[in-house]
Image (cartoon, helix red, strand yellow):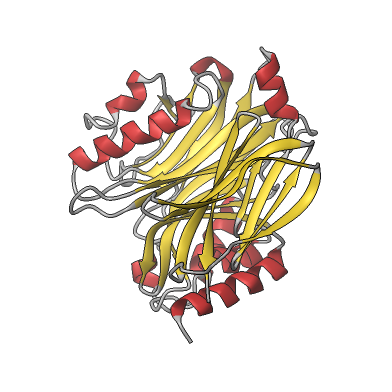
Amino acid sequence: MSDNRKMCMFTKKITKLAGVAVLYIALGSMSAGAQYTSQVKLMTYNINAEAHESKSYSDIAAVIKEIKPDICGMQKLDSVTTRSSQYVLSWLSEQTSMPNFEYQSAMRNYLSGSYGVGFLANQAPLSTRRLWIEKTASEQDRGVLEMGITIDGTPARVIVTHLAHEGASYRSSQIKKILTWIDSVSTTDPVLIMADFNADSTESSMQQFTNAGYEYVRDKDGKRVDITKKINHMLYRPKDKWIVVDAGNPVYAASNRNPVWATMKLAGVPVKDEKTALKQNCAYRQWTECNTVHYELPARSDVTMSLYTIEGKKVYTLLSNQNVDAGKHSLSVNVNGIKCGMYVVRTSFSDFKTSSEIVITD
């Protein structure tokens, strides 16, 4: 059986067990009741897949359960590789009783699977966005994952990523792309970024964040909380919309990186214009399984949907500005003449854009 067929069967299995958690994309109903009331506890954790290999991740699960975050962003996640045959994020979701999980691949077709970043969350995200940063030279590919949430009814965006270890120039390029991607949606939304940046805050690459108005999470004494390795950070923007209630960087033996956590509050953010209001009241959902795209529209809309290779080359258009009724729909991908493998489905309607990965099989 081919690796692609194995991946397809595995995706179907996870979809059945966990709804649309694996390949779920949403521009979500931000006007829904608050997911997190008053405050939210966030945590970033590099779980060191290389050291775990085929061993149990029970030590990582124990750390997460002890800290008890509402949202846990993780780096170095294996997904059905020859090194770790399980979908690690799904397993951690079960072990920690955090039912919602989102994954973004960085290194694709890696050890017969993939490797990347992800979120565990107590509440389902109201929106998700994904960015894949392809390598330019000797560095590794990188992934960026964003979740939309509300805190006491106020919308915010939480982002997890993992930057290059190969050098500052690579990190600088990656940060520039990430900042452009964040600002393509809004330059005023409350945003929090958590990551293993592989860089101290004093590095010139990281100064791009402070130049863009981001602040480092600090403890009650005003000290940055990334005290053990000085490369795992949380940053937030705008300063006047976030309140750091508490934060820490405890030491554990489970990984060669220690978790950074912070409890955050938000001041209220008013809806300033009709376009923002539409976005906060509009739910679009898209998820995929082998050779099929599923999507749900909140209202009748003109939809454009295209299939691309992982490298960004357009294969063909699935829907071209087609008027589609509100509700749930499924669209089969014509696989004639297409090589088996992973592709990207990009969709746009009513000024909204989203994408999701799809596995094409015979």
